[in-house]
Image 1: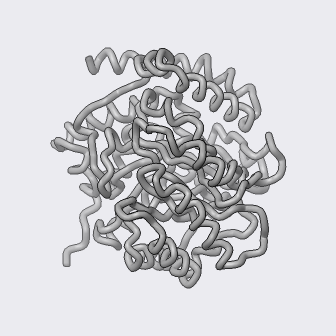
Image 2: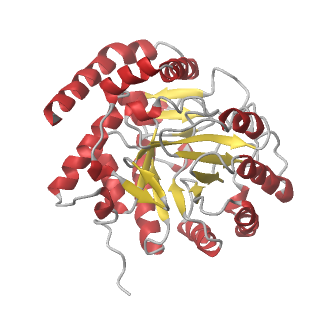
Image 3: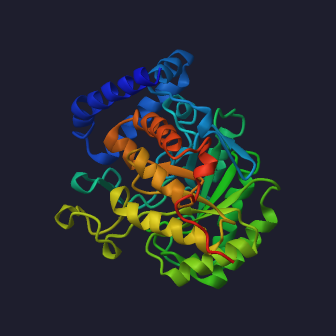
Length: 380
């Protein structure tokens, strides 16, 4: 059976690279994104299309089952926030081998995002990256929560909450209330929260890197969050070690379960991309330029917190080896988008199948046993 699944994935990958992707890449990236979302919505709307999609792309193995902060996952490979900004594609994710999906980021108010609709997304194929300048466009927490409140999800769902990006004027009280609004509206929707304090494409910058601001936010969120629902904080890619440690200390202080590592990489702080390929003077990069930064931060956070915080690893995952490196460095869960865009929708199944082989090679019976196995904690 494994041979047949491998053959299926290989054929699908060839078809995507030589047929589908060249056609998709003829469209401007933001237009292509919208069209692929429409395809995903269509496939998710009908039982027959979900069944057919599952036949083509699904892979499952019990060795990948894992429970994290009380939530059960069939596998550790999830969709990152930033793809399904309005939570419209949840029905199709299980069929293409995602173990979970993080929706949003959702903001307290309707957010149009940055100006220039249709020109806020750019491909950097030599760098295996996407330059993003969206600016948190979404329909707002009220409308989205109303639409999702009666849905039954077939996989764990994360709710990414961010501050509405409509002004360059920062007011701490208003900002905190914006986050609180989303958290409260999604109290009974989804399985965990991610608090996005690190979007690099907003007018206000990243004001919650400041210790006082962050502690005020986390203190308030700890008061309103529903009991038993995990909460994670998403960190920026360009932080100093001291800034990372400050955020980690605040997470531990206020009982936050973990961190998402990490958000997009700003070109001015990154040397992992082909310089002449940079297409726009604003925005931040996904994919390969983020890979080393993310894995290095995972290793630091895992050791600094002695494994006390759950880590969700994001950035530069294109194959099973990329995923396994993040897991053995300390990540319990993983998220991806860019790998799917460049490699094809079969890549999640390929990664999961490859993870099983890597586990068996290292003598592990479950994915949980591999977490941090190549990043031993300091001896006390």
